[in-house]
Length: 261
Image 1: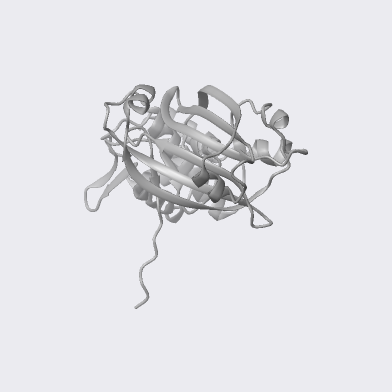
Image 2 (image 1 turned 30 degrees about the vertical axis):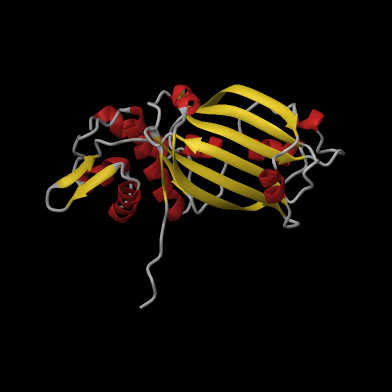
């Protein structure tokens, strides 16, 4: 790591002030950004902890906590007695599955640039299974948002998002004004829906011919399917998101507590 790297890291870290917890997050975010952008080369060894903390103007405990976060994400490898290294496998890590955040926010938090292509918004009569999950009558039409999501211009998700319509403010005409980006933000700001919580089911599936072509994979390549029902504060389903993730491009984390002794 050269002096230019120290300078840019310091500027990123001290761009805003806050509590110690915020400082740890800012240090982790600044390092993560340099790792994912390639400024910190995979396999490179970081300077010793004491020296790096001094250059960045932070305490060693704060630096140690930030390093621990990145190690859990797989971006940094700590070899005790040897040193701290940038992992050679640096796929963007899109946060914890325990926290419900928009994909747009997750991509930006991981240092990537979110975008999309092939956006199509239609009004359809859902299948019996989809209607059942959304707790609506089978002849009630819903809005379907289909798109391919990208991180740094690389396709990584084929998304189908079913939105419950009510014929009033939440009608198809209003939904058709969605132009991409964060669907959570659009639903909250422009569609009158605030999501309270969600229930997700995750499974591994094989890419069919269409998915493989869209995501640039071989047919049969493994995909992570996230099937997620979102609920409003009244407890009723408002959105069903079915996302097929290319795990060769990104990964997620999951924090798990140990069983009580």
